[in-house]
Length: 294
Image 1 (cartoon, one colour):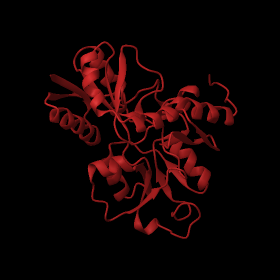
Image 2 (cartoon, rainbow, N blue to C red):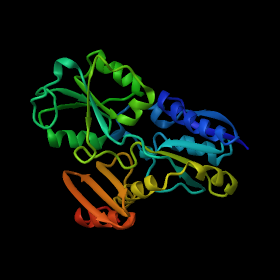
Image 3 (cartoon, rainbow, N blue to C red):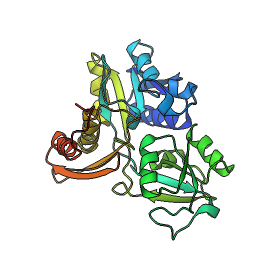
């Protein structure tokens, strides 16, 4: 089968698309890439000031809906909670490292500091509302500064002294294999600093009526990952949010039980249930069914 993958042009997006391409080619398919520029790539203002959802996904999804591509590959955490009419997520890949990493200039590293190894008043770069809020909850003395650009660009901004530290996803750093030997890298456990829903997971979409393509993509699906992120994203849907929501949600699926850790607007909640939906609902109830949610 000839398949076209729609993807963003960033180094990380291309790594992800080429990884899927390689897997599909190993099954005997011919695969090409269709490069797409998204709203998030074009606009460089803070995410909080941008209108709508799906800043890094909508244009890629449109390429599939319009027939310019057959498959879309996304960082799953970038997808809004509401499904797109005409598309379906046919596969989620086995989760890579879900954790966040704090990259720190050596002179600003302080191993004796409380909660995070940063000197007092350090300037930390991040573009995510979730990270921003969790950082300040742990260290109110930190100065938070907007950080945009692809992963290598963000790292160079740190090296150039624009920031004392920046926060990035461990999975992206591992995939790009950047040389970070001149920086201090502190990996934060996902039950301490809660990652974004589905962080470290790739989502692969196709048109809903393309049953043959969907059947091919199921070969890439990881069910344990699916069960875990269904709890994470199920809660996000109940809160009617996307990547602008200040929500950390991390689940594991072991021995038939989904365990969900949640950070939402200063509240920490932990739940367990045999089903993903049950774990998400228990967390939603524990958060007090926030105003504006379903």
